[in-house]
Image (cartoon, rainbow over all chains, first blue to last red; front, side, top):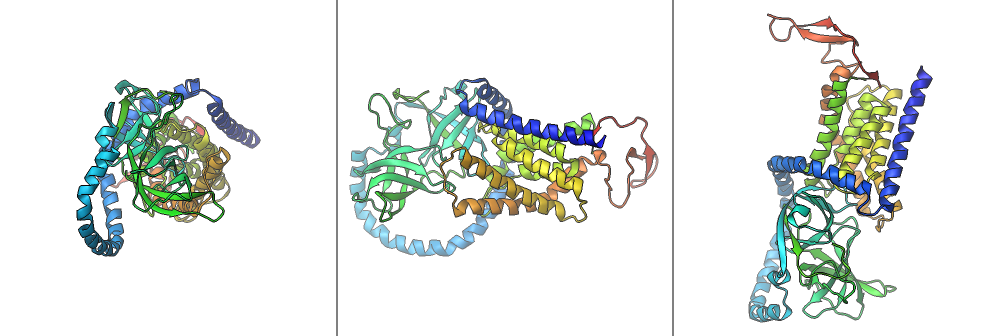
Length: 290
Length: 206
């Protein structure tokens, strides 16, 4: 009897492990329209309304916990901020004269966000779920293909670029954030800085890295990066041009490195996303699957 | 544990609720720069209460649900969670839990193991990331947060599954297997007696 139980237990365990491995390898080799992906999208579609309800119901509790956490964090930041305020006061005087000049630059550089989203049909969506690990920087939103959302549509919020649509179901979609290891954005430094690829520093949601920038190129702290949105007629960037990405926080390069490493802090607070806008429609981007 | 259909339903609800709460509540919280992960804690608790097979099955289902809800690669979370669920259950089958601190510490240890296993799987699957101090911090802090989470969660799950537990002792009273508690009519609160169940308990012992 005992031996039979042991055999049954082992059989269950082995079956589950084998099934997991089959799922894993099948999903890697299967096309996006395959049966496993379809089943997964079906389950996600069924659970999305429940997740949305839970997200709405639990928001006050979540805000309360975050408020307590932020209050503790704010105490530590207080001293640091006082010092920064003193520095910034001095800087404000110098910046006043630069404001007029800056307005002209903005016109010239065309980094106005309204211009960036011009030609698109923005769909506002609520964030209803997010991945619990640093390995997948993804969030789930409460609108999907029924609202016209397609794969690879760019996602923004009031601060700047958030990511792009990775998977779509009828009433929900998965957004791959710009901090996801699978994501890379072609970007350029404004006003007339170089272009490169912005990729995440894995494990740090507040840091991006602008790569492939020659050592001779001069990039200063606080320089602003926007999406390059390039296209050569056959292949294109998934992101439309001129969407603000972030600000240069530091630059460094080793002696043996061919390129310099530019650290970029994203404008969008990717840990606290409540609402986002999906840029649907717009001009067709050759080579970007919809 | 005696798993009747009602107990199975309770377990299924626990797993479903855990995944929904993780995705829509716990994933938005951040302590010491790390998101608390409640799923391994619940899977380990179920493994400790129900044994290896139940832990493995619950871990597998929880992982499958999580990967489906987040549209992630199917099978990764299942593989990790079924392993920790099974190991927790096997531990319980071999060693008697004598202290109230053992389940939280085990939950912390197994969550740490799950986080490390998940990281190893991701690296093997080709996620382009270097093993930085941030990842190590994430894994360790997740383990520590799991200890804190398990302090209320383990007793709660134990209480929910109490009718199925052979050795459940509410307070100091000892309930024998096959017996259930009923309240006598007309008596004040707190006066209860042990009565033999009319029907034998249906279900499998795990």
